[in-house]
Image (tube, rainbow, N blue to C red; front, side):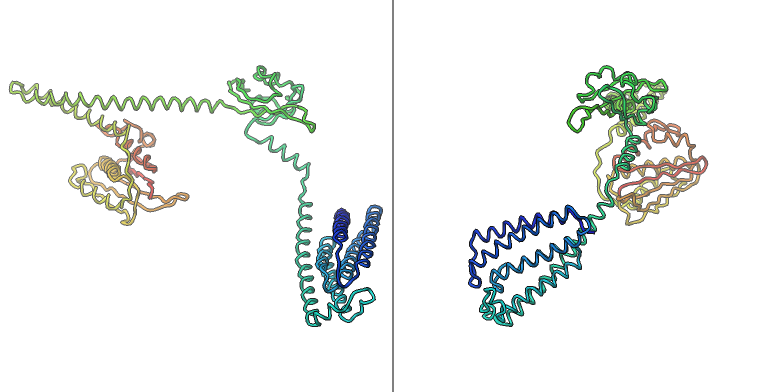
Length: 539
């Protein structure tokens, strides 16, 4: 279907282009040695007048009739061909610089009609242009004042080459212009098919307003509620129907202190009693709504519940204070070790005196034993509270485990326990060497102490992928007594232990070290069935 608006703009554009083109030609007094100047000017003036009359008549027909649109469009293309042909004739024929205007006719046909009409127009251009050159060569255009001399001077071979070149150019233009026009029509058709349906847009808007995770309401210039989404219904206990057209300060009393600033824009916080009786802290941000003329027609409010956020902020602040207390405790523990060492040394010196009897020596040995235990506890606590900054290097885990097994071979706690090192020799982890040994030392010793009598400890590892990262999955499995689920949940807590005489800092320290290296730990245990500790470390 031909677009009337496109034909209308095409006619206006042709009037503009022809006026500028022909006026410029006359103003510059274009001359050729083939056609007399007087004849050319007369023809140009008449051609301009005829083009104006034809274009104005076409506009009248286009305005009054809707049936003849196709015929009128074909007439535009034919007139353009006649216009270009006459201009070539009065400007020298074979020497005319205006042969390129045929390309515009072809492009117009592809734009206004279709690809097939572009090919028909290209064929007509070839016929007209070829006829002009042939007739000029054989002197048939001499009565029109067009000399045959320039064409004969070029020769028949050159004229044939010129016709062939223009023929190829015309059809190539028709192909490209037709293809682009077809694509443009398809794009325009698709755009019209996907034009915004305002009812659907309204439904979409209502859906968004009702499902966003914040309160949204609007008021009119009188301060009465209009939009009231489901989030606001949950905050206030009022339905959309109940809240509609009610004064905002009546529906939500917390807005009363801000009533004068509703239409100025701003933000604030206020307390609000929830439907269940709880006290909520709400924040709001208001923006004035303006109409087409820029006048304020209401305001829109974006409301958020800050109660949970404030609670988390308070907990975080409390955690910061606890961290500061922990750091202070670590410093105090460090300071306690110095006098503790002095006490231990003094007791040892007193115990060496010859006048000390056996009873006092037993008391001194108790003091020394307890000071050593207290010193070990402080040492472990200091390491847990502030572990050393790790120096991460690639480690072959199989070699680390093998060296650890060699060191523990003489430990009496592992006298009846066998250790199986099933870690692949090519598995590499990124870890601090000393801290890696400390981690597996604690795990192996804990497993050995959980085994009563004979047993085994199996250390396995494999490379796994977690998202985009590659990790080493390492499991330390023992055949010990195991733990119940309540103990498993507390196993990483400081000072929690299931062993007699334990400090409860071993696994807590291991957890801190693994966490510092960007890893994680999982404990799986069952009473009477042993324990498996699984580590995920960067590989």
